[in-house]
Image (cartoon, rainbow over all chains, first blue to last red; front, side, top):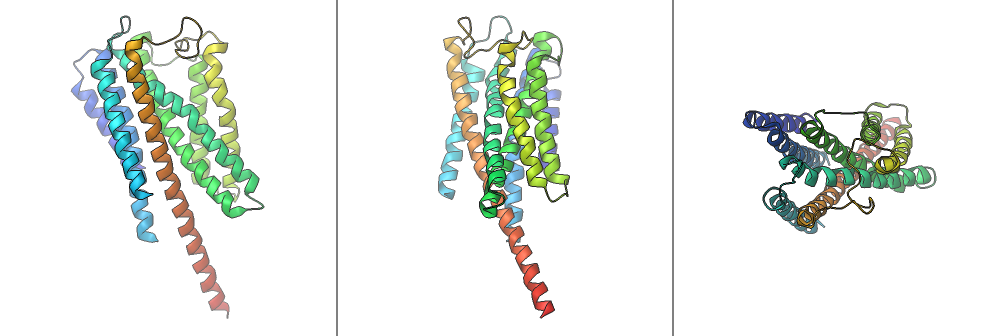
Length: 58
Length: 238
């Protein structure tokens, strides 16, 4: 579970820093979009890694 | 099946990319809220998926409860479906909550309020967190049954979440769809919404199938390990 969590935190942090000087309206918009894609990509990646692990065991 | 899944993934990513383009570059800026309204194109599809997949979870859980005594193998398949749907639900509900808060701060001036929609939605999230915790840490031998019962509670909460903005006066905006004569979306915003809801539905189905397949494989490996241990034990006794 650490991998997707790290991806989510890093993406959100990067998006937050990159948009720190912009008004809250824009910053929160980009943070929201970053969170959506990071969360979904993180979960998909975790599932793919688990597939690899289970294939190597069977 | 593998080829079909790859084609499905490519189609899904194409739809999502087009939906992103429409949401950011094509849909007009909303007059009152400004650009922050564009969160709507991701918040609402995620929230809807967060209320659809609990019913896949519920079907799997009820199937498990019904079959667990007379057909354990099929019950395991139903449980795998329930688990996959629970995880997908948790992802979508988490996104719904976080994007909602990110929208609320500039729109309302606060990150959170205990109104009926938000509270019942948070309860849904907590129920699925509990579901995952029970599956991860329970060692009673009744883990699958306990988890299935939690999913029944979640199934009861979903219609309350849906109806909360109709039953009560809430700070959450009134329903955009099926909300009466004043409800609705400006026609220029409809394509961005429709493509995104299509894309996230396709994504949800894709990830559900992938996760279900993974859980079934895990169950098979576990079964093989148990059989090997049993065989080794029998040989040792002989």
